[in-house]
Length: 404
Image (cartoon, rainbow, N blue to C red; front, side, top):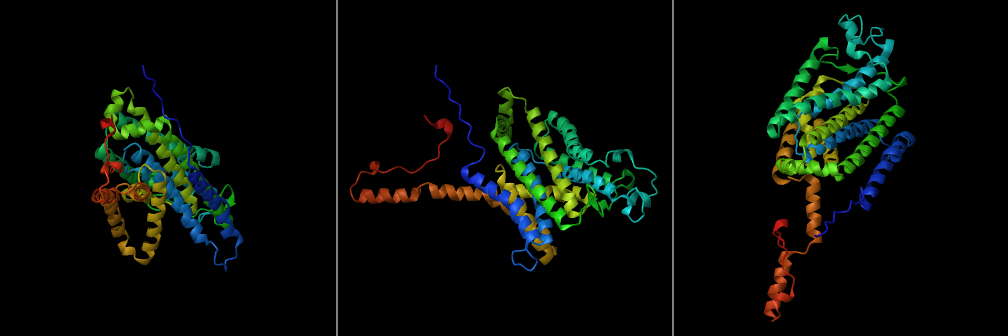
């Protein structure tokens, strides 16, 4: 009886990968604070407060793109409703920030200004724990996670998949947006939450606090990247990829896909909720518009542009697309949506594996010998009377199962 040798588990990151990771860590924790807080504003290397806020916002988006890659790239589940989880985390943080305003609002009341305007006398029940920072951190994780669990349990148990699942997630997000638009729900209606003053009783509109939030966002992004890398390389991650490629065969192998799909769905939703919570204090506003269908579709675009099932690709995609958006919405605001649509179509038709996939393809071509060159060598050898069999044969791709 032959002995089966299982493949050994490699390192979490390669040598170059760890080098890039630590470079990113130094940039986030040391270089950016140095350029923004230490250098004078007249310096050519000074990092403006606008750049800090913009990059912090894009890093929040990158966390969402990474979450999308876990469920779409590695599990084959395309969600068009992740904007809702992002907004839910943002609203949890926004409720705390509104309570931090205290009596500094326009109406000098302990209640948020919009509640005073609507003649509310007390806080609604779902604002009970909004005054506690610790409970806010728990709710940022618990609320998106719980809603994702309930929705995912019934959806995956019913074996809804493919385009039907995508449509249902989009409908769920649209319904949540309509609910949050209503004034009586206690979420600020159309205007949402804004005019934040403090966080942990520390003024929020200061250069030091903005940089603190920037560093926290960068560390969270890097932490989620390492966690995702560990997850997809584990046995759990291999099962997810098997579900993506052939769910029926996974079931015949004795695995129940439901707990795997549900777990990664909840993890992805929590990551988006954390991103939303980091986004709100840096941008200064949260409203139901964050739940729009367009926002959820953009998250999928970031993952597709960068490259699905690569982890680093969606992060790059978020930076590239949002960097282009920041420039185009100022220079050519009327053309931004056309650019986004054309970009998604171009990636779908010509770059199915995204930017990272294209780079990997180029590297593979550089490393492998050219078949055309070998054919030329064979022709030259034949003309000189050399036996062609002495030369290597061209590379032919053969299925694994066809090899002897």
